[in-house]
Image (cartoon, rainbow, N blue to C red):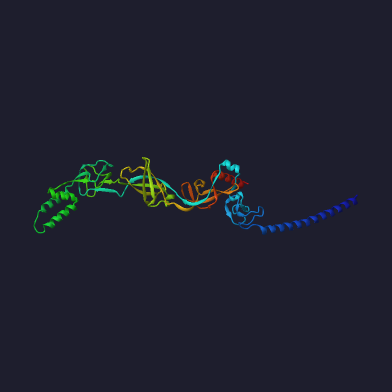
Amino acid sequence: MNRKYLTASVLGAAVLSVLGYLTYRAGISVGRTQAMTTGAASNAAPKKPGDIDPETGRKILYWHDPMVPTQRFDRPGKSPFMDMQLVPVIEGSDDAGGIAVSPRLQQNLGVRVAPVTRGPLHSEITANASVAYDERDVAVVQARANGFVERLRVRAALDPVTAGQPLADLYVPDWIAVQDEYLAIKDLTSPGAADLVDGARQRMRLAGMPDDLIRSLERSGKPQSHFTLVAPMSGVVTELMAREGMTIATGTPLFRINGLKTVWVNAEVPESLGERVHAGDAIQARLAALPGVVFKGTVNAVLPSVNVGTRTLTARIELANAKMQLLPGMFVTVDFAPTALADVVLVPSEAVIQTGTRRVVMLAEGDGRFRAVNVETGAEGSGQTEIRSGLTPGQKVVVSGQFLIDSEASLKATEARLQ
């Protein structure tokens, strides 16, 4: 019995020894194979953008961290954000910023595409404006000497006046003495009397007497203490500072008169479009109060100041107002016709998605694939938008349904990050 157990033990030990030896040799062979495979893979591993991915056979665009897909790297390695290796982004993959949409889904979404073209951009700028007085056509009537306002002929602001119309009657007692002096010596015939007369006449001018009043004194020979102020021009009394019975001093402003033969139209142009509006540009102005009437003119100046509240520039336009149709304060719509931009890259304006921080278009790459592209836009007009960078002529962009495609791409990106 003991001999049987001993024999079985010896045979078992021999079998285990043979199996261990075979396992050891197999482990060495497998280890060598893995080492050789690893070394070959290491030597063939892609190291820069443009290398071929051994699994897909396509070019590698860049590497990124799936958790932070916006950050791109030009070589493989460990992610600086997560404890993981960077993942290659393969050309034509969804991670490369594209999305595949079936023809049936495109039809359901109403996807339409349009080509990127090159040509002139005829843009029009429409701005709101208001009519104002022409500040170059203004006159201020002041008191020429100390006195009193005895009678006011124009009694309210915004009253229309014509050139030569009486404005107020003034009593100026200081003029009596210089007039009496002139009358006392004007008939002298002694030597040097002419010089005395000229001196007396000059003192009347220095006292503030106008030339027409001095000529009237020379004709009548009677001193005049009352003087009538008249309007130097036709227009509207925009400021009335005189009142009957008030005392006035030399230089006191009494009336301000603004002409209406020409008016200013101050157009508020958005700051972003200010570079396209220049002095000399042709404009057309329309008023809601005068339907069907179009006023044509040119930009006189673009004022060197920006309205902080509205972020707009003021373009000053001077318009003739012979029929007195334009009144200060009227609301005006101004259409500018700036010089056309020649030979620029254009896309339909509806193709541009504005996110607030960037501008994006959905590029149609063919075979139902679409990709979002950041672009830099320029001027806009006639339904076209200038593209300064990001696209080239001949490419196609989505002009309808791009928001749904962009939403689908965002959902797929979110799903990939979760996985």
